[in-house]
Image (cartoon, rainbow, N blue to C red; front, side, top):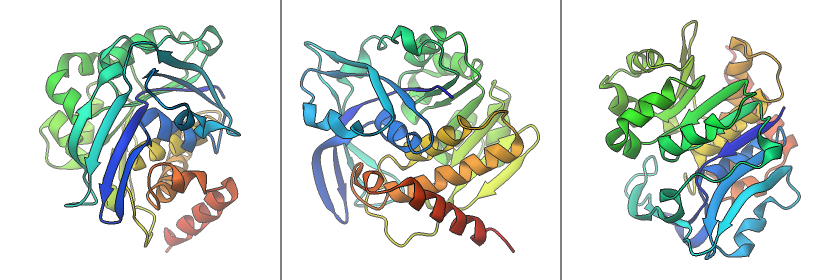
Length: 300
């Protein structure tokens, strides 16, 4: 049940119609790890600069998240992202981004993490994702995320990564950019030809799409009236999905579909407040209760 995540850890500034938050904790690995920790212990691998306030890294206190793989690099600066949802709550406009430590070498994986069976390669440079994967010899399930930047600038490295993983999570725009297909089902099937056994396409407020050789499965978003900050929703979705899968034995069609539902529910907590506030206010009982309600809405 060992679940490892590696990806970005950053300091965010976020603007939405509900206000602005400066210098809050963010990054793909942070949202994923917190979301997944509702289901299974998580091993976090990432790097920040020595400019990162220690208070931001205390977010995992009392959570089953092992931060032995967190590097604080002297002389380096932490990844920073400034995003705005003022025009469209479904898509962030990047106002400013500084890769900083993300443009350096991949963080070192602690020896006690090398036996990890479940691995999520959260969004970062595909060469670094491959480097991390190359150190892990006992993996049972590897799922990765990516973004339009890498599709446009690191296509060759991304294709190498896709040939080595079991599952890919990306959003609808990224799926179209990757494959040149406007129809998302066709885009998913084209992606399968690149190596993954299954593809999950996130569609924001319109839910998600799962495509494998055997299945085509569509799931709506959880019906929620409160959307304050969509930042990290996709990473929380992946965290809920992978956290649940790490508690199940074999990967079956049914378990994968249930995992998507749990991911959808966890993401609905994330979007209810800025940064991690929505997740930190949630409990596993609340997640299970909302999952049951979500399940009932799918019955007819």
